[in-house]
Length: 445
Image (cartoon, rainbow, N blue to C red):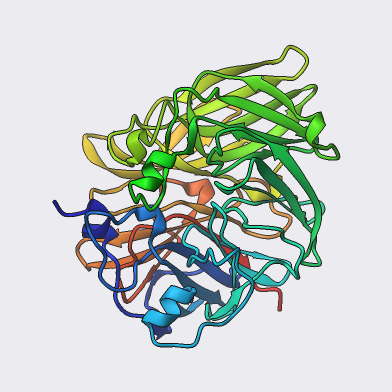
């Protein structure tokens, strides 16, 4: 049977492309000056369809450079891990890897402390890229990163520091780190855990690091059977949430048991008096037998953590299936009003398709922006109109496949006119396979 992660909109592309002066419908706001970046799995060369795992495909980063109302270029580049460099018959841009454990990161791409970083979890190191997305090599932040990293670090908007939680099957702990604006790790805490859990994301407030210790754990049985990603749902592993004070050590973590569930992605978190509020997408369960298919859909939750009482109140904000939550990251660790998610199979005015959703946490309302079925709508990245503009005063950027043109567009939406016509649509010369995460990297020069 054909592997669904190598077919259709997920099928890998086979070429690296550079295109200049891209065609645009509408008008790109002149204040948008920087790069829209997105990454995802794109295996180089033929894969064994019976064993290929989507989470392990070689990473390919895509970028669109915007400046002065123009889409100056589009580029897609494989991240040159040892394996990819060999497959391309190129020298590997050498650098520090973890005990020979080297992957081409495929999960997130960000800009921090002057670096463009391609990220993945589970023990591999980040890769540095140059401005035009060429690979510079793996990095350990100047020798300060002990092991691997994560796909979902959180930048504190006040300090510019990058907080992260890494995991690795060979550890009996999680590694909480803080990367300073000098590009080096300035703080590290080992948090003991059992069963080697997968920790894809976490949450950050002004007071706490919020740790998810949930029932997807390393499986020796899957590893011995040759599974590329030997993690699966574990009924015996107690789900819990940990609160690590920002200045505390491992002994200061306050653990609170919760009902079994799985969380891939946090929207945001903040302190509300003595309580901690976390908005996230929650799966009732996931990865039974290590499979990505056949799982119950995720819903949008709000968790209220009461450290004094030792309890977590879980409230479903919206029970429609949705994932990839994002927000205005200038408000990270602070109370937010708006959040944006992706959903599929929704019905709007008798039309069925894929959609972006905008949630107003103050009014308790939401808006849905529908795209045609088969659009493969990606995660929406919020970009403020100006550094000091109000929350939601800006643009949402997302990649959308055009089934008619058989190519992918970068769609730019005014967030305050969420269901209106796009401000601009940049027509890319290729199809961008469905992938994971992206970011806006504003030019600093």
